[in-house]
Image 1 (tube, rainbow, N blue to C red):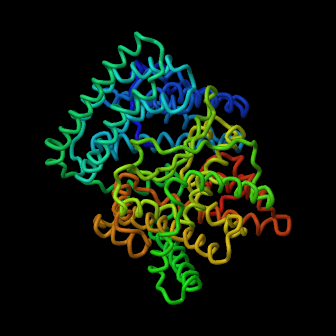
Image 2 (tube, one colour; image 1 turned 90 degrees about the vertical axis):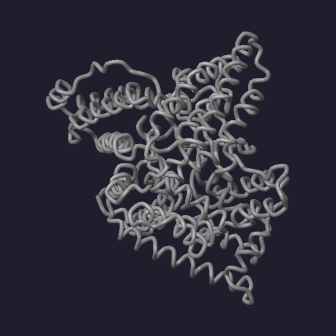
Image 3 (tube, rainbow, N blue to C red; image 1 turned 180 degrees about the vertical axis):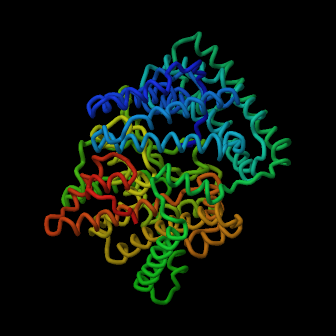
Length: 587
């Protein structure tokens, strides 16, 4: 689900004005400017960021938003856009040279986030194109109330009731707003909505079966039935009405694509240069795959070795246990080899992926928000084969959890990837860096860890030489998947590649199965800049090399990782300024 958040919470007239704030900022010295920026940034989160995205507020652990739902009516989108423009001017009016280096960097992060939000609302306009945003938002806004016990069950049930009452309006607005919809977007919405309807029919009632408030349970039975009916009606409308007229364009275009990269990741490298950097990395990964595959079995081609690797995996009923075992080995290696400081002894809770997410994810990390105090457990979700699947379907699914990808997935999601970055959350230097993160940092770090751990010599206990080579092949296959995303995202959105061309590239150059290629291509039509995995990894590798060159014999890998983590998930361009004290290029 992740980013599929819509917006509600009408905010009335904004009383803050631009002119006086600008004048005041110019008269203040460094201390006054810093105080003004801190106050203004806090106001932004209250007045705009969470107010128009209440589900994000709940996920962040701010539970005053728990009864509100996103509102994508044209009138509210206009209010949201106006509020963003007001705060854009207010932040710009705070002089950066009146702030210390860390706050000046936070000012740039906040401005970029505002610019990105305006680009999304005014130019990309997914709220007018993407039917899945609405049904996904309906599901996610309820899921974040039931996924962790941050409050008593009865209290959360009452919040669910309040949100369910607004879902019919949300879906009604979708029917009014959706225009020039790309066909592939509507097809994705239709593929997803069966699981979303099932979520309301089965998962939500089960989650609140033990509630004791009889009045709330009676009201919930009515609101939940109404949501199921509204979702079913929406599904029928998607198929009979929207799909036949879904002839819109999904491609962002080069100008919008470049702006999104700049605002989200602070990357202004020309697209042809980005493609060249990725191409060199992809060719190196393919060559390394071929070399190791030949060592594994010189009589087979790399493709045949890959097919053999797909068959080496745990039994489906042992999959969660395999991940649990991998945690212990990874933690021991991290501590023995001083890879990174683990701030505490917390461990993620392993569980099966929620049903409505199983069509789009095989594994994911779901940590609590930065302000959550009622329930601080993180969940590592793994998608298991389902009853009724054919043996062929099970085999294809389990191939994603072969002996190599089990390691890379565990490292990526948990130790020392996403979960460890979450463990450092309390040390992030500001509220801005706890809320606003660059995906090149977040996913780039996790993807970097997959390679780094093996480069440092990690292997599961008892793994012989052949198994270690298979594990490296699994890591390289995952790297090639991300290399392929890099190319497909740019080529589809800026050079006119068709979805058929994209799928073929995933198969031939990314070493993926046709079914994975199809799923990845669909993702790329909406997640246009999903090059951030490889882009972020390469940025971190360059930063590491530059820090090592500067520090020489004093360089410590563990200290480098600690220094990187404590900066929070800021764009790597900002972190380079802190760690190198210069503005050298990220690539």
